[in-house]
Image 1 (cartoon, one colour):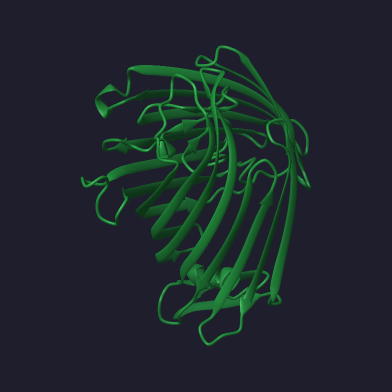
Image 2 (image 1 turned 30 degrees about the vertical axis):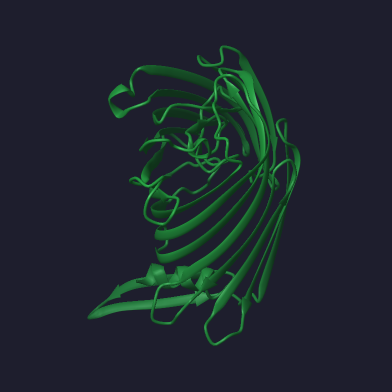
Length: 363
């Protein structure tokens, strides 16, 4: 209850910071809660560079409406090869947990590769409306239930022989999502302790209850990683993750995608894979394990070795039919403006080296 109150002070009531001290005393406890000044608004600006998208910029602004029902409004915009605009309205009824109404627009121009070779390109506009009906959060966790409407407007599609896309250039779907998230890591980029766990289940329809007049299709995904400090400079981080799709006639916009270092970088369902730099589609059932060794060689300099091993198949019973592996070595500097570094990787799927430079926080 104390941690939930501290989270509310920071996130819902806009205090710059909040903390507490709890001491056991004869006959009870002594509790002190302290908070810094209250923020009326907040503006954030980020700029980054990498060898895939060159330069990108993102701006974010938050402010609170002084209404009878407390409402926090947040705007986010991104400029670059991928463009995005998003608005979130967080409502905070006094006797209930907060709920959120969000709208997001994206303009994507995406190249998709197959075993290291460019297979096809497509550009599309994406619209998304989310209504978070249940949101329970604490210091390191949140549980969320969301109803979602998604609309895909495909403009130009240059397709290869390995992917068959739907003829319909305008698709919309209604889905329901249950998500659990736990994060106790001390740093999202160079973690030395803590764990991160995320699990999500989605039920997808095209008319609120059915998909193509049959049962909805389902998607389940999960990821877990844990940082083990071996000494003051050496950290070992194992990770498990996967995504499984159940149903018939799955739209290609929900296919499993791997590549890069981060979850959900180009598309929401994207999963990382060391040694594969570009985005590649894989089969419906995908499971992976990775191990990362992080060595700090100076105050803010790191050398990182990572290996990833994965299986995938069209059905759960055939998930071990295909085995792939990949490796990457990174040098990174943890600067005031975000991680700066370069990576060199190789995978059995692409059979060629991959080089990547990243300057700044990832968004």
